[in-house]
Length: 487
Ligand SMILES: [Cu+2]
Image (tube, rainbow, N blue to C red; front, side):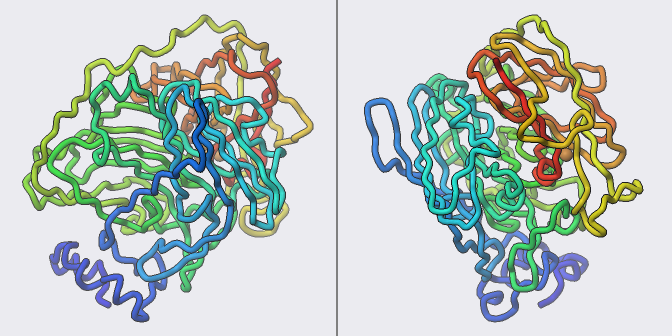
């Protein structure tokens, strides 16, 4: 097979590659030997199927999810064993409606204990999927979600202590899209023009098997969108709502269209922004969600636009590309992006102030730990302490609003900060008011090395013990997790 780079040097467009590096060829024995050999943009994007309820009652939809091993064609022609919520990577999407309860019955067929956390959800602690609240092999568990919160792109992922990092990496996540008739009435692009894009990376060996090594971002250089490496998406020349979800363990995506055209950011983790905000660059760190409206109406049929990723780690000819849009004919478009999307909840005056400092043994700083090689033995801390399930780090009085200052004390490694139970509001980043795209409801915030953010959160829903942690999942597994008790 001619190297992709060579073809590009010859001036042949990537469209030619689609003919040369067809999935059929790969099936015929030319198996991808590394991420570098996987052709880009030869397979169409797929969207995870919507899970059907097994039963509907007056106020509740019941779902069945079997946690099991499955096969997925992450790269063309190769079946890769993954862990799955019911088949596929990511698993099927739950489409929930605000005000209508979802009861999700889990059956664990894996050897490991599992725990399913609805990321971004405000739920009673027994339904939060706690790290120590696990379901053993052969066990069953029903998670009940009230869906009494703003419409938002939520997602479910494993959170079982010690194994969550490898479980998430091997595929245990799925979308949970919470809808609201009030949001539907805004007229944003909908139906087939509302497309989730679950982004992540993976490291595959020469036989196409997923390789998991703790804190191994550099080598996870195969980029997957909805579980396929570098797919393309045929789009009509009109507006699309794109729900960007970062399901990576470690990789932050800095996304832009290859022609630099702006994307209208309309929503973040906890739902719609107050107003749309145009930007050419969208940053999504692990666990974060950013929704944009992309308008393809100005492009001639046949135009190809790459959704590019402008940062590493890893080789940029691989990790620098994510997805390609192939623009087709214009299509009728009565969708609109209103100037006002919603009124955000008011910001009460905080009465308690706290500080959180994230830190970890960084490679190359002389703190390589005791493990001898790799990340084993290195630890991550919040306020100097690694996770201890028996310790409550932060006690919050129910009903209060708190002001938190969160700092990444690192010199080289980015972190982020994820809070269970409550959506928070970012106030400042390094002393300046946050960008409008970060000013909505958030549950996860990125902190580049040395950065400090301030945020406020109101704890007026459920009582109990919930974690907060770095959502670079490998870092959480290295101890960068604390516990909050709402009393
Ligand atoms: Cu981290």
